[in-house]
Image (cartoon, rainbow, N blue to C red):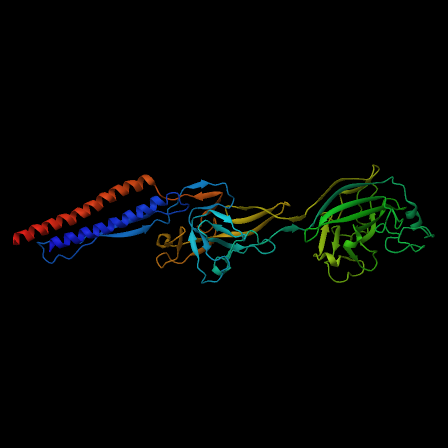
Length: 483
């Protein structure tokens, strides 16, 4: 009966427009939700087969909800360095469990990038989802394996804890006075009488320690150097250490006796041929024009970059070598004093001995000071000792049909058959969008459009209810004929 079908059509109209009002309500409520993608209810007619051509049977309307996930929202600047947006295609890969790494671990995809560092050091957004990416190894190298989802891990900016950078390079600009008076110890060292002679690696003829390393002004032990250069360095644990270069004018023109030792000497275990605390000893020679002469110098290996070498705090050093003291528990360390085989910063002129400039790399122990992310998704931590380290790279997931994703609470989505499997990519590559640091993506809701749709939907709902009341009145009229 056509009147009954009209009433049924009215009911479908009420149902469809109720769904539309619900979607519009969600859109309006989330107008200020970061990364929110508006939903839209589309209508399609329902057609019933006409049994009798002269009669019309109403089918009504069906509501189909569409999530417009692929629509780009406006990017708005934000003060936080960990606030992220994606300019282009793709979604952040997140998880609800920061320690889960298996292929079956639940993963959620979102454009809501208001990430902050939580109490455990993880980057977590306000919905409680943890940002995932590829983690750097101990050397800062990142391998972005887009074909292995298990390679993704939750990004933790405090995984390095407090960090230190050991000293690897030292730059010295210094002069040794060519007119320096030769000391009596140096004179005796070159004479046949060794009663009070300088000796870099053993006791002298009178049995006392005569090296510059052993020099103690209070006790009179050792030989006083003509000039000393102290080099502050950082070991592998970030502890400050001091390496000292001592020089003693030789009776040979343009040559100086030289020793390298730790201050205090207890910081180093010295091997056979070295006095306690000593790292190396030899000759530093200069050309007649006052430049460093590597050919006639023996302090460093000929033809190699002048380097101070210290073994790790374990084992017994070999003859002529030195290790960091066992109690320090630090790694082996090589400290280059030049970038070439010539120690070009060290000269010998008639001016007074002086250090004009001394710079070292490496830093002492430092704590996390800040986190930054660039447009390729590289997460870099900076520390209050000036060290910066690359920690991870943010992963971006793309989909063949992002509008087919299923929405879950927290402005996130999960994979469905309609969306297709996710494809992992590095930001700004292979079609994935750029990371926009210090930005947040606004919702795609236009309030003026939503309010207009709300009015239209309300009128359509009222009209559908009018269909039912009209059909009811027609049935009442039919029943009144029977009376």
